[in-house]
Length: 190
Image 1 (cartoon, rainbow, N blue to C red):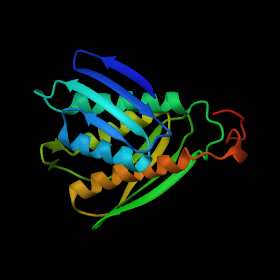
Image 2 (image 1 turned 135 degrees about the vertical axis):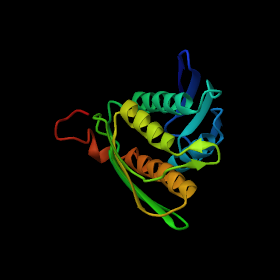
Image 3 (image 1 turned 90 degrees about the vertical axis):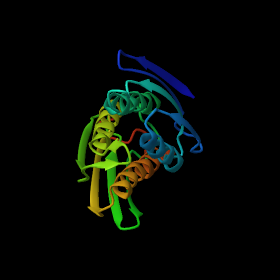
């Protein structure tokens, strides 16, 4: 388990994770829908994750959602780099009823996000635009390239949850051990 704490005027966050875990989680962000998404992410990535977040949710959930993405992403980067004996690339398409979302990613050490999940409104009290804020913070700080694309669907809950699950499964596949690949780059460094 590796851990990180980040304290700002807006949030106080402590996260610990085991990247080669079993998908166990204990998550309390103060944002119920985000907790649900991160529990699903942990389960399907097989990364053990503990998160405690106190945020200024009396204003709104933005700071908590974004800052959890920052800290979680930076811990993933700490656990990954330098990459050696891992597949590096991963992809998954996840179906939830009428929705299908794909994620293709590269543990490139060069962050980039393509996010094409067109959802507007709310899921419960959760502003759906915050999903993109989470993914952006996560990807930039994890230093991965990820393309998260909705292929079809209408239900906001299903689309966002399929996005989290597709990222989780693609990441699980990308971090899979493979001794034969060594450093998975012709540059000999990632």
